[in-house]
Image 1 (cartoon, rainbow, N blue to C red):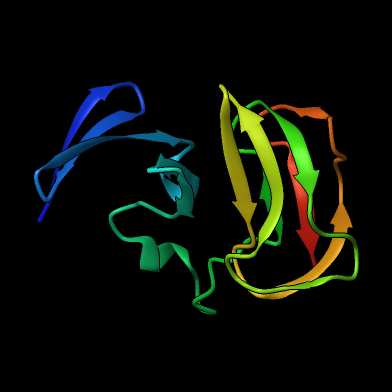
Image 2 (cartoon, rainbow, N blue to C red):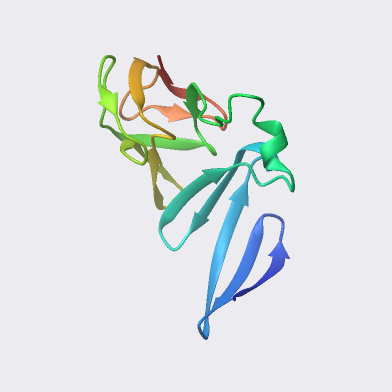
Length: 130
């Protein structure tokens, strides 16, 4: 089991198998974005996340938003595209890091709200699903 130590606002030091790595977290507990080891994770990190899901048991959002201010490098989908969970929808660049934005679940893209080269604010809607 690894150890986690908060070293700053949204910055954590993770010790796993004798290695220490940094991880960065942004957003509220119910919709937290975590950047670790070149990957992006998104989830509900409340202590009782199952209660927040409601009776349907699904936490898959109908929209995907930008986790932080960034520039869109590439857009990989268009309206009408079927996507699978984890598929890269867009690639953003922020703070000299590339951030792949992945589909939170299987679905069909109903709208893409941003284009390549565009600067977006945190929480800007990027993609909507049917």
